[in-house]
Length: 503
Image 1: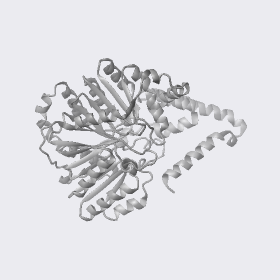
Image 2 (image 1 turned 90 degrees about the horizontal axis):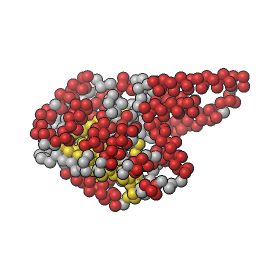
Image 3 (image 1 turned 135 degrees about the vertical axis):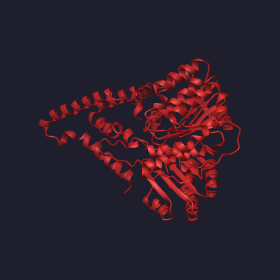
């Protein structure tokens, strides 16, 4: 039986037990049980409010625990406790020293480029100081629209591999697409290419042992990131590796919104056409994405990849723009990517264009977008026209933020009655972000993510043009019409909004 089926059965059993709680208790103990349960809930809520969570999360968890005492307490134990979130993922000094040593070389070369960027340099400086992410010049990028373009390019580059292939994915689903990629990987493994696959335990819950064994049989190494553990004070369910990274010989790398699954090549009957965006990177910046993989592989396997082939870089001649690669996760005390997005928004003079499948921003980002819109900046947000499979509640949470943004002059569009999974932030004509990060609490605070910041590269103009084309097949949300939606939907949005930090 698959683990996903076991988890569903356990959840159903828990719900049945809770609804029939009184039948399992003698009547004379009901009052005592009631007092104990509610007492525990009150004490738990008190400690939540005194804790170090963000204010929005504190309020949501406290309400959940108080109004659903048993269920709320169990969910908080599994998903909410953060006693060892930093201890579990603390970067080892040895890893940092090795990786940082080979990355310092590029910083000096970027000074001239940074000097001409004006106030944009403050963003570069922030990312470099807080995230230790250098600025790379000798690199180029290519925007890959939708699954077929990404996987055509990926398969061609995989076939060229000579030394190593590193793959790191949140979701890997067995099917036609995975079969094609696997055949290439197995062939390269037989040729002597070293291949490592890192997958997330939650996202790949249905990945079969037989598939993994078939990889091991040809020498492909695999490892499961942050294996789910339901022991108390081990909140491993919450901290997922949401990255999608492929690095080949440190010459080319891929990242963005696209996992491995047949739905990404438009074959799923529910989604139909799946809109998404990925990026291919060539040159010195590739090494930064590989450093993310090296750290994640080390935390998962305790194997430190010290071979020079994993740390060398391959510059390409390119005088157009520069790149920074950001990684973030619960191992950081600062929410680096969220703060970098905030900084980008405050730097905007002309436009702020956002594409995201989930729009659940915190109060800081909401205010930044509102102030920008009221200052005359063109703020446009593109969200799906159709909710993700099984995530209607999260779609309602996204809609719960429409009113206050629309009222401030932010323009919101829904994509063509279809699902849209791109994760893009464009500021003016010269800065953009593309990566794995959704515009929500979970991506900013709980998931391991990555994004690529582009400065004055041709790919920014490609993203702008693609965004314009997406708007042509999207429906604008008109504030006056939005206010006329059904009262029940308004009430549903208000309720979901309270708990949105938990989604």
